[in-house]
Image (cartoon, rainbow, N blue to C red):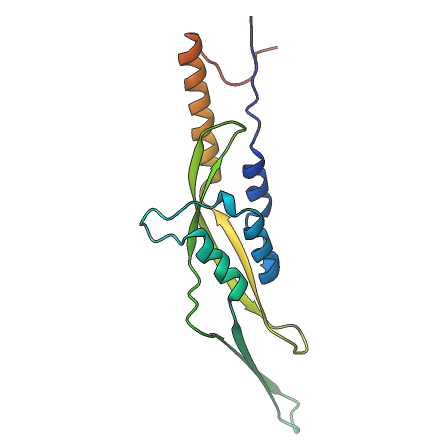
Length: 173
C-alpha cells in the first residue's frame, strides 16, 4: 500500500510569497499590510515593530524630495557635463523599520512559523518633476529553508503517527 500527501501550501504563504521582492507604492503597501495584518507577528523583544506601528509607517510616511540638475556646455567644443543631485528627507520623527516578522503556516492546517522579513523602501521622483513618492518591498528570509523544515516536520509527524517509514520522492518506474 502507498499513500501520497502533497502538503498544500497555505493561503497565507502563497499570498506573502506572491509579493516577495516586488516594489509597491506606499498606498498599495499600506493596503497590503492592512489586508494581511493578522499575519504579522507581535514583537518578541528582538527589535521587530508591532503590527500597528508598521501599518502606521506605511500610511503616514512623508518624504520631501529635492532634485537638482545642472548642465554645462562648452560652446566652442560642444563638450558638456551633467550634475544630478537628489536629496530625500523624512519629515517628522517616523522611523522606517528594517525588518518585521510574520507568523504564518507554510502548509494548510500546519504549524505556524515566525518568519523574518526585511523591509526596504526608496523614494522616486517622477520623470519631468511631480510629487515624489515612497515605494516599499519586503523580502522573506530563507523561504526555501523554512519550507524544507516544515516538510520535514510533516514527515516526522506522519512517521510517529503511523509507526511506518516515510519516504519522500517519486517511486522508480
